[in-house]
Each structure stands twice: as structure tokens, then as C-alpha cells.
Image 1 (cartoon, helix red, strand yellow):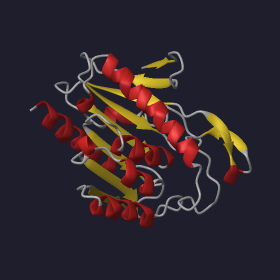
Image 2: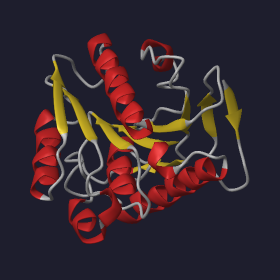
Image 3: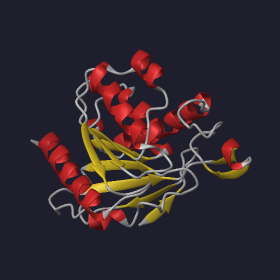
Length: 231
């Protein structure tokens, strides 16, 4: 594991495979967390050595968050109301999208084809991942969202990329989530279906987090998605 800061790019926690990487997962954490949050998940995914994947966990910038009394914390954008889907800092979210696009470009510069890059995000990070992946102008390998919602659905509909209209999408959500209600996850799924995507939906009997069975399912999806891209 290394932690890197390169120019104006976001600092990232990186987990390298034992062999030279031929794919990358860029995985965004939730509000108030950091790039180390999902680092322990990597070995639990049980990816085969034949699929060497680099994991990049960006650190969100520190900024005041309105719903938390203006407390400064890692955040991809400001949340202005407790009804998180109703009023968000769209400009802040789009700035984070640009920062994720820069990380995608860095992976391309490091020799990873864009269609070997998966974007993933948990909670607030998932809202950024939705926009970044569906509007990215080059083909991506897949999109995985966890315990999140689609914060910029109207903009995505206007700006979505033709080359990613068939992107594999998988959505995970806890049935007892008291931070991002599962109804917001199902709304995102329905919106994607309306736009012509074919998301896979998984619900788990947990609150706002991950369980072992979910992690195992994520690993299986990554193998299917990335091995499919090789073949």
C-alpha cells in the first residue's frame, strides 16, 4: 500500500496487485471518511492472481458541511439539508467529478485502458461516481455504487456519454440503512432503467455499511466484469 500526492491530483491510498496491474478500481469513500476506509476490503474480495487489479482510494478534500453544523471534514460536496437528495451542492459535486476524471486520466497515462477502469463509490462518494462514470467521454469497464443515491439525475440525463450507455452497473444497498434510505437506492435503479441502462440490484439486511456476503458479491462481479473485458 502506498499513499501518493501528485501535483494537483487528490491524494490517494493505493493497493497494488502482486503482478503489474492491467485494470484499476477507483473507489470513493463516504462523508467524513478517507481513502483508508475500504482498503481492508481488498483482500476480502479474493480476486484471482490472474486478474491483477490496482485499487485507488482517493481522499476527499476537507470542507465545511452544512448539515453537520459547518464542521470541516472530508467531503465530496456540501450537504445542505437532512433530506440529502433534495438540496445538495451541485457545483461542489461537479468539481469532485472533475477530480475523479483527472485520476482516470492518470490511470490511462499509467497504461490502463479506460475500458479497464471501474468507478465505485459509497454513500456520498457513490453520488459522485454515478455522475463521473455515466458522463465520462471514454468507455469504462463498470460502475459500482454502494448505499447511495443519484444526486444529479437531471444533469446525467442531459450530459451522459454515448460510449457508456451499455456500461455494466451494479447497485448495493442495506435494507436497514438509516443514513441513505433504501428508497433512494431503488429510485436510482429505476432512473437508470428509464434511461436504458441495465443495473443489477442487490439488497442486504444491514444498515449503512457493508457485510461479508456483499463483499464476496462485489468480488464476483469484479471478476465477471473485468474478465469479460479481457475476452
